[in-house]
Image 1 (cartoon, helix red, strand yellow):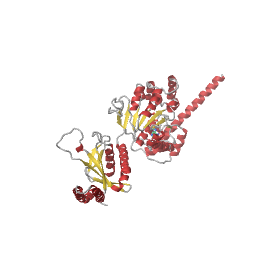
Image 2: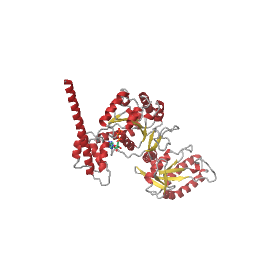
Image 3: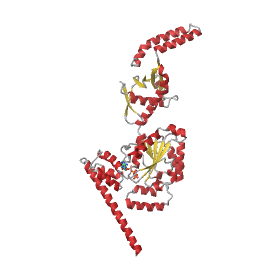
Image 4: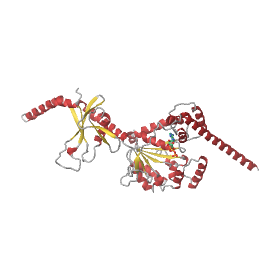
Length: 491
Ligand SMILES: Nc1ncnc2c1ncn2[C@@H]1O[C@H](COP(=O)(O)OP(=O)(O)OP(=O)(O)O)[C@@H](O)[C@H]1O
């Protein structure tokens, strides 16, 4: 088989041209029946001399204004798969990705192979008619890709290969595009261009560049694997959701004390699935109507996040004053409820629980495409059962104080050590005390160039011992109080 399509075309071109002239000449002189026989023979001969089929994919769709999705997918596919073999390349920057992208230059031929079948691609451009001027893309200015393959593979190419190119191209687009972090917080967006909003500018966006991944997330490895599998399954289950008649949406409730990795897990989810993140600040939402508008303006392949849901709207059966009392106790005991959350609690949104539930349910049915919604809370027990029932929040994920397995991941992340003689001591202390992964990470973080792992691990041990001492002292104090109360009752 000849390697290059151009070489083959050169070989067959002359023969084909001769045949075509002969056929045109003879056609007029023969009766109809004979012409049909000649026609059949001619086709056989042409197939023999030129056994290929060509398919053209123009850059613009029928209306001439919209770029063809097929063309874009082929462009990404060829750029990623064929630029290594092409000798002439073009460099440019796509709208949705800042990096310089190399593409195959016009009239450069590249080959591809699919399940043992060889195909040829060329990118070309119709030469424009320079006499006329037009403001719109014109027929004669359009670029196109041409796919050539052997006639005998017609079915496999049209039924399988083109589908494969489209899917691969789309996947590469998703991978390469810069993802967005959209927020409705006042002054939250740098660009203010609006993100998924049509006309209202209600979401503002920045580029999402959080480095967290599931590999660096410190938590029980078995649970972590389950979550990753769940997410991956969801992202590939469009047909399954369609078959069972459910909207392609999934809800996750992340709960646990402050600093246990809830926000970090959301970033890891977005990085795993290559989704955008819509960070919904409920306290900045005026009412249920505005909430609906915001959610309808989210795009597919996105994670909608409502952090500290219990602080944002009244999602509890208890009265507000009870909450305040409880939080003050919490604050005294653990000193960990930060000021931001307290402020949020004071400024609850006018969105009601039923408004939120209706909007989420409406979103599920009204918006096409896949979406994940995530609620986070430090106080899962306060949430109304209706809000977190399965079907709305399908997965409930607890993120907790740092265990030994989670510590090992942090030690690997921060110190690049898999094992150490101090690990045994740390394991014992972690079993006896409660420290968040955020606090453990803080102790392991290198603060200067010269620090070695021993110094960081010792710092962690010291901090854990201090927590342990405080815990012991608190227990003693409690015992003493109970003893005093008993004495007072006896008196
Ligand atoms: N499980 C974890 N794995 C890796 N890093 C973590 C983990 N938990 C916390 N961290 C570190 O601590 C920092 C704070 O964690 P994060 O904001 O994810 O906690 P959170 O549970 O969302 O806290 P809050 O409830 O206060 O919002 C992160 O930037 C990260 O560096």
